[in-house]
Amino acid sequence: MGSNLKVLIGDDSILARKQLGDFIKTVSPDTEIDEAADGEEAVKKYREFHPDITFLDIVMPKMDGISAVRQIMEYDEDADIVIVSSLGTQSQLKAAIEAGAEDFVQKPFSYDQIRRVIKNHLRED
Image (cartoon, rainbow, N blue to C red; front, top):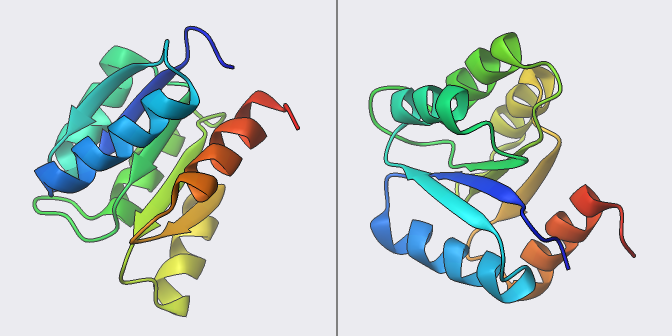
């Protein structure tokens, strides 16, 4: 499923990035993955890498995920952004969705949640 998919993972936790990357590779083995350790780096990498799906944590140094979503959406209004966070307060989620995020995955995430997001993106059910 999903050959040549490009995914950007923005999270300040190396472990979270690795775990999410491993899950994505299990769902879609040919996926090309790039990583960012903070919101500022995520925006920069988005512009260079042009991913099909971007996973962003909300709480990150330098720039939070919601600000990163806004900047990415200003650059590319068709960006497919998924918030991955353990701190999902209603106001933060609402702000992320209003900024342009399309989906939310609660940490700790499951294989099924990541599979659903990838399948939704690929429109395969």
